[in-house]
Image (tube, rainbow, N blue to C red; front, side):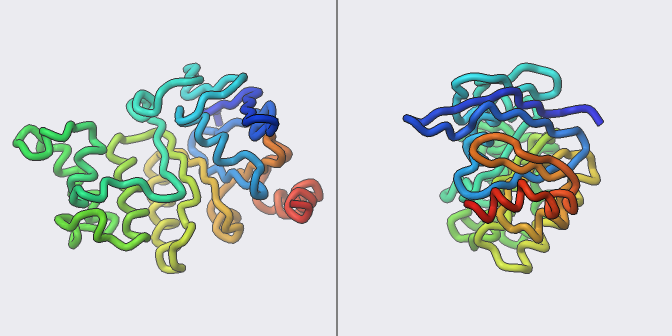
Length: 243
């Protein structure tokens, strides 16, 4: 499998702290790749660099064979690289349906006009059905439960027909039923051709869903392999037990 995402010797320093320290890794197309590591290992910082929310001090990021280091998030989104956040980011004063319309690239004025294409509206309605949000389509996003907002954010990133989705702790703060729901949607979209890179602290979820699993410690990759290999690797165990 070819690499859809490549990170080469990326470094980011905050004051005297090297949050990411010459990190290199690859995400192969067609995988659900896990990215794990103890607290402070650099996972979120690396996510923010890859998705354009933070500028690296050095190193390169490539997506789909294009150098995208420092590219703004909006352009990456249009190129097919999108993400979710640990705390779901939705527009609380827009309806659930309007959140998806905005994600399709429409401006505010177009929400309240007839200029939203029939195809985009149909796609939004189909996603709401798929994510079982259709009954709350007309509610404000602020009225949703935390788990529903997580699902809405996930549905919104799919409006761009992405090739790679970065999920930042998709199961954080949600109940076991919602975890199963999230896993089902990831598997479904993966089967439809989307590649995923998943940061997650729930190791049971990661080991069940992801292959391969990349391990970060102190800002760099220390191991990558199949879930069983990761669980048995002494260096990985030492990184967690010593954290």
